[in-house]
Length: 395
Ligand code: ADP
Image (tube, rainbow, N blue to C red; front, top):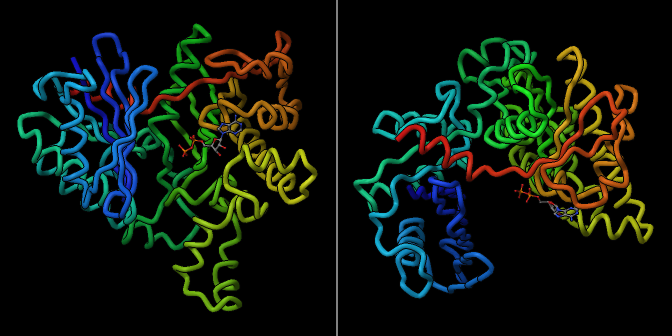
């Protein structure tokens, strides 16, 4: 049973085709610059990589190019579109309504459209992707998998902001959390690796990528997470500020003669480790510069690590302890030095890292020492597989 997974962004589109009889990856691809000159599809199959240039004006054209490529004999992927059993779509915002994945019908489309207000950059692109597939593959069922869904079990005291209650009642201003598919996937995987039931564990999952968030997963339920109303809250990220004093928005807008929305744009796109270091949003570049003695690069890394440790410790306190800490995402999976710096700040709760093993590029492995009171793991996230699993289950 082949399932196509689509993650549709405003000008990009990622996809994977998975064989769900054995959960193997058949092919993956990325289209960039949709609607912009120079659009292209990068296709990866086994060890082969193909770059296919094609002018793609919109998502309809992009997805029809994907389907055309999937059945192109040159790449020997599938011979007919009938071999696609269902399509799973990543949808960023499900609001309060969608607490789990759903098969898409007219009501669901309306529901996702209603959430545009909450995710104006993301949900429209996700909707465009679903509509394009409905047109191109009319017989195939679509499933929507929401980034917010896993956090829908947060208690009121975790999701409410301390602002006038009417803003919640009238406009649904509250914390939603994101990266839910990843937090759910890695917390389950960690339990499996530890040979324990996730329902008996207190886990802190650290999804550290360009966008980064942490979740407190108690008995399999996310009871708090660092991203909030939007993905801007919480950790210091590649280009996002994370937590700050909201009064800064007005202060900077006056000083720099910017509108509130322009300041928020700066907080989203020009802040984080990029803003502090002035070097890059990419951790590899920042680590290289820090090693060469660049003080601002070092500062950016220290700020990032400190914020992560603060969240982990506060979530441990809130859950009444922590059994396992999970590192995932591009940085969490690959940067041994960040993991070490973060764990060094957590020795007081009994974290003890096996520093040598931490440096061996571990994947899906325990990296804490035998004496550690808390298990620390590196777990590879796989949001596409998680989406395909939900899709398979629902169709
Ligand atoms: P996203 O999916 O949010 O775009 P990823 O999870 O792919 O992001 O993570 C991207 C980040 O991971 C980049 O900042 C990149 O520098 C970092 N990264 C990838 N490999 C390494 C590495 N070997 N060491 C340090 N950072 C790394």
